Length: 201
Image: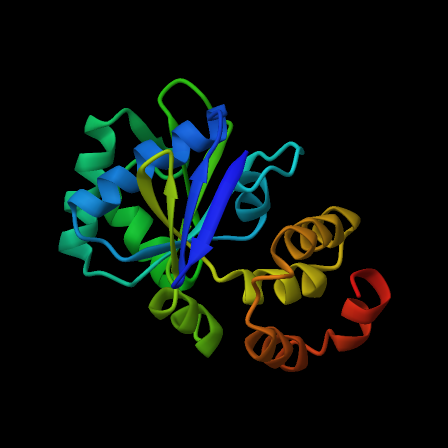
């Protein structure tokens, strides 16, 4: 795997896995429908070479109207994606997304892996990450991910062994290129300075 990082963009070339292919196909539909999104959490570390299993990909999508979501629902279905529960766009929007519950989309006929699709929560951090996403060119295909300076503290905040290893992987890979001021800002915000010093420094 080779990558180059400059001016807030990352160019990455690697052999694609099934999860990468799923993500590329899914975000292609979002892009065609002009839906603002950002990929977060475990998939970011997998994207950059961390070898571990994952059953889903977390994606935050800027809140859209019910009408636009219905259009997106149909567009996803045309690309062979279906929502595991519920089975119609109105219920998905009214009973899940607007109540801050995520939806899971997967390929038709399969339940895993899936894309966990959600609107931003009230916390400012979800909206910040949507506005400050980083563009990754994966084998020439554009994806938008959460900044690494946020991913590392957030993984320490989640605190499972798997999450700590995700944080360690990202830090070792990017430590020479990180915005240290921004990293420290999020470590303070999430109260994870001690864990950073314990596990990563």
